[in-house]
Image (cartoon, rainbow over all chains, first blue to last red; front, side, top):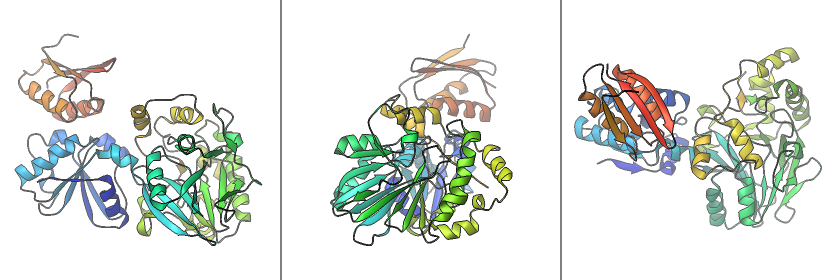
Length: 377
Length: 75
């Protein structure tokens, strides 16, 4: 009997580095552009339509008695293939990923990063299917959520479980790779939505300015959220220092790469800002800050329990994007040979400014695929 | 475009559009053209990839409202 497996159960296996064998039966183009990665995942691809006449193409690549999780776009074809494996191939332990890659793309795995000095804690939400990272700071029964993803129900359920009330929603910049849930969640909980004003010029709704000098407090002035203007990925991109210990870098600095300046079509204009943010602005900060980015690109960036972070000083030693002394070389690196732009990034920006309001199903489709917000040195 | 047979796969979710298309193609002669109507958006890239791997030729595809139409020449 094929057993259903939820995205949450699969996520636990990935972040706990359990051995996980996945048979992805989508067509090869889709598989190549985007697949389940991380932890101790071994994934093979064979499109379902090649298995209709028999499972020979995969029979030799898989052990009949091991657990095999079959995955497709939405969960229909994988169910069929998992049953074929059992009925025709004598497999004994097949699983079908419920909802397929579409559901995987929407799963958020909460991981605790640490306790804050005067009470409260910081959580990272890892979107394993897309590489997006969002955060929750909670203290004294109040919560701020940073770089909220579209699936706002998940944050609501999580804060309810923790017994905290969401008061503040912050986006470090106007996102182009995923649809922000910041405004929608602010509306729902009657909270305040913050965005850097330089990224808000095309906004069609009210927001509060996220600006350097105007610290935000979470719960009885206990936790300080200090904005640092660090443009480059966008002109408004703003980092946040939380509790003098954590540096939320948005899409400016990642663990293994740096932000790209071209998603608003202004690579040439913004490359100088990016350089300045990475090579001057951040250098003035404490090396002991823990960098918490808004994305990760490589499965190996997932650390223990699934968290993604690094010490700022360490990144100055080993992140290739921070090792380029020559400004011209840097300019070339971040404006030429960039990876393809994220799926539907123009429409995603317009959704985030409020210019367009696509239906839920359309929003899901717009976000399908990997995020591509980084330049790899 | 002229077709030998029309397959209505509207309303069917993956994998059924391809399963039905494969069955219909098996009943045709080489060179015949099968016209497929489907509403599952995933059918587009899957049909193209399936046709290629099976040695068939996807002659044309169109989108009329919610309905995707494909013309596949049996190889």
